[in-house]
Length: 512
Image (tube, rainbow, N blue to C red; front, side, top):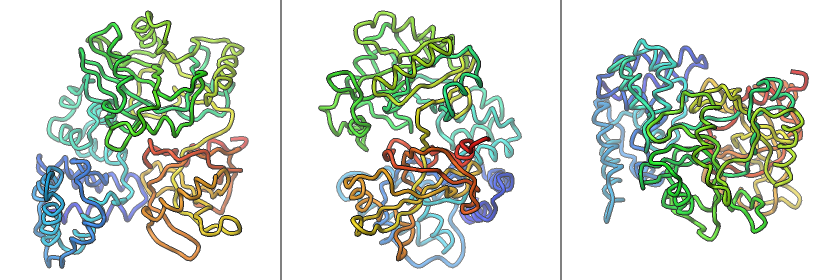
């Protein structure tokens, strides 16, 4: 298969806003690919590299800009091999070798192919096909039910492998994908709840109500003496969190997959600032501030001593977790909470969480299996103030005492159909002088375009916004706008694909 065929499919995807049409274009490309090409094609059309980071930055991409080839000749296999070689280049002189490999690749590419490759390698390929659209396309191309593809993806954690399995072996191959200790699972996510009473009314009395911490999500796998830790984005940070490793290594089990949160506490047991917790997670997995100790709080178990629990209801998983942590009274690892509370008991859990300095509570249905990678209604997070994780789309130059700083930020919610984020408002509130300085230093590196009013940004940075609700508005393309939005903090632990979507904003409309 020629790279030109993938580029044409990418252009077709970008030319339509229809999720169905996007999936059909991708499915056609997958059917045309040879078995060994399916994985790379699926990943590329989702804007991903199967190799992950290949060690090439924008400066290298800008320098490696030879004249374009007159006719397409590059194959998918050849491009994939070069990207693998780029990712494996290390040691003395590696920068020069990478630049030479990249220049050779681009010299064989047409102008359209060059633009595609530069955006793909630079992480800027946004054609409106997020992972969910590509998974729908994989199901259509393979002629298998979409739920089976999604389940295999969440357990395998790799889009390219899942696509190759589906088209190569169908439903049988997908069904063979199971939870494996040592391979991280996409975390189950909670949807915003409008209030505690509303969450309880929605889910009924068969729930657990647990503290919602202002910490970092962790997934911990243990296989004998070996313990490994991953973040929400499935980045391994084992080397940077030795205290978490030791706590889990001391548990009375042989194998386990545990889900929870971790955060830094002060001497009084109250949570330190979110930034203090995140200082322990360096970009390479090493601790940036080893003086800040992390405390783990576990709230789920997906596997225990040879038994997979991921499809069991939460009540069964909590029983297993309680048995595992039963002898840990002096330094409890269990997330505080109450099962099947009365409304008064649930309110007391919320008061207790807020009094301890935490964000609120999560209400979870006890009959729900673990829906890896899903933000469903079975888990609902309740905070006294509405919060949303949104994408920064732009920033305006300030005036008055903010002259010279990038101040008023433009906020976008994720398009659930895979398009560009949908703008839902602006805010300059909640920004300290330190944060304004950080924005002014950081935003230019993410600029898509520069205007007299400020910068238009690539949709990469996620910010947590507090707001009083939402209102209908013809001013923005989504028909909805934020009310009294203010910045709480930036979320380096989240990607733009994990931001809240526009439906989460619409759910806050008064009376809806």
